[in-house]
Image (tube, rainbow, N blue to C red; front, side, top):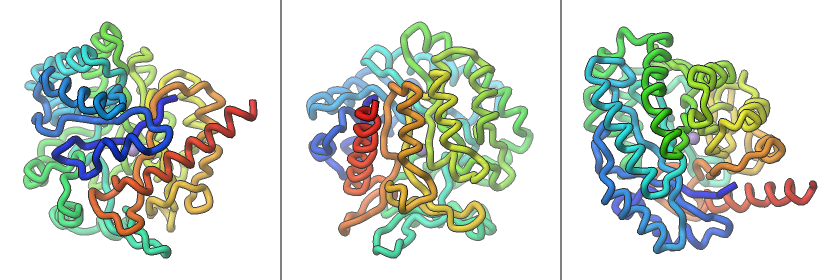
Length: 355
Ligand SMILES: [Mn+2]
């Protein structure tokens, strides 16, 4: 198991690598290039520069989050083959500098959805929340709410220039239902998984966030059966999962512990996002502190499901609250994620020593 933290690069992240290096137990960062347009090939020199920065700070860079998928691939339009060829080239370039896992998602239009970026908890800390009543308004208003409350930071998967045309994007997806989206995902995987096998990279799909349809958009990575379907559709260890406990738990019908256990056992979980959420009512929730007592998830059971089934992939605290007056990119402050790291490693040490 390798503990990591996400880092958005020198231009995009206000947290210096030197500070991440000082979080006990963190061995590596999870990074990405943010200045390459979605769909283009990631140039070797830029990837190399990122890996060198990590290495110079005493950290590894073995996980990329994310190499985003161009809309033409998800829609299945005739232009997709060019973008798939570019993706294959990016995989080869990443393998050359030692990348082992690529996280991605296959959600149309929105990579994730929260309705409150600065939800205030009783202790005065700030977190992100999702309340259904707040998406029952116009698309433009929902997009504007998220973008206006990002504290001035770019948000992963929420490119303002792309979302400026949100109605056009929706129109492009009008003929894409769940079946079509599945078909397009398999078409993509059949083209890239052989390349991954050849160069030693594992793909790790992030579940849908939230794991049910919003705004009528199709959703194909929501639950145990979707993950089972995905693993069987292209039966290779290189076709794997980023198991995000928070995203999966946003649907109370999902049994997070059973899903973690099954797919760890099947050797498909290459990367784990571990965070706790507190269900407020129905499917409304906020992202709580990591400790079991603050959320709806039993974090001991989460770590035990990974541990007891032989997890040996990468792990990171997914998000953190803003505490101690810290400000920055919502979900990605240093302090609360560092507390999360320490807590998760504490649970892990206890599990190791019980055996
Ligand atoms: Mn996640």
